[in-house]
Each structure stands twice: as C-alpha cells, then as structure tokens.
Image (cartoon, rainbow, N blue to C red):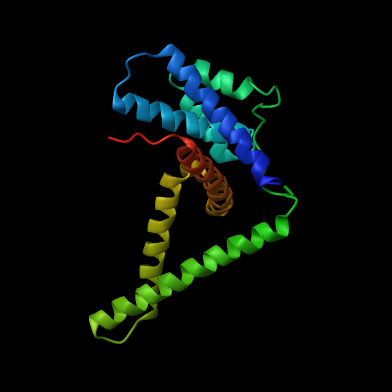
Length: 199
C-alpha cells in the first residue's frame, strides 16, 4: 500500500508527463485514436513503474507494453528514469508479510463477505421468481455460477489476472484499485490545471 500518497501522486505525474513527451517527440501528426492509445499507455506505464513492478498487475502492464517493438524505448525510459526502478523476481505469495498485513486480510474478507451477501440475495430473488420452494443444491449451483462469473470479470479487469488463483486475485485487485484511485486523482488534477479553450 501507499506510504505517502502525495509523493506517490507526484511520481505518477512526473512519469506520465515524461511518457507523453517521449511519445510526442518521436511521433508527429497523430490521429485521435493514436493519441488516445499513447495517453493510456503512458498513464499505465507511469502507474506500473512507480509501483516498481512489485505486484503482479504492475509486472503484467510492463510485460504487455514491452511486447510491442514500438513501446520498448518508452518502457525502458520510464522504468530507468529514477534509477530505482527495477523488475524484481516473482514474489512468493505464501509467507510474504506486508507492513499492514492484518489490514490486508481484513479488507479481503470484507470484500468476500459483501460479494457473498449479493450472491445470497440474487439466489433468493431467483427462488421467489420460480414460485416454488427453494432447494439447497439449486441455490448452491446458482451461487457457484455467480461467483465464477464475477471472478472471471475480475480476472479480465486486473492486468495479469488470468494467471492468478482466487486469493491472489483478491489481493491484487485491492492493491490495483488503490493505485488506480491515485492515477485518477493525478489525471483529474492535471485536467483541472490545463487551460480550457473557449469556442
């Protein structure tokens, strides 16, 4: 998790602007869709590089961007700009201690509990609509289908999520959400600071 949110946001902003400048200097006369792609790429790489590749989602973003030969220069520039960014080896999930590990587990349990309540409510609605007495096997199969569907959506949403088990997926999702929130705050602040053009 973040230790000093304002410093983290400053780093994200610095990296994002660096990425935009780098792409802008190497490309001219870009279409709107190409500009959109470069903005998204720079924002994602800024986020992943500030996270130092210490999470699976950040490594997945960097690996995905590195696959394209056009992006390799940008990836190397953004990862190496501070001199402290590097890609560590794989992080073992068992036995790893976070500084606020207890809070991490509590958050995971609360997310699971909230999802479980929604699934139970949906199962009850389905049972009522059928107009017959509920069966345990039926409710269990509906719950399993809903959990599987939600898990698949999460795996598609979180970078690198398709290769994660369910527990790792929840941990990575929580971390990714915190860092995405920081990215949104940076983009919002940047958008507010730009002069508006009046027609």
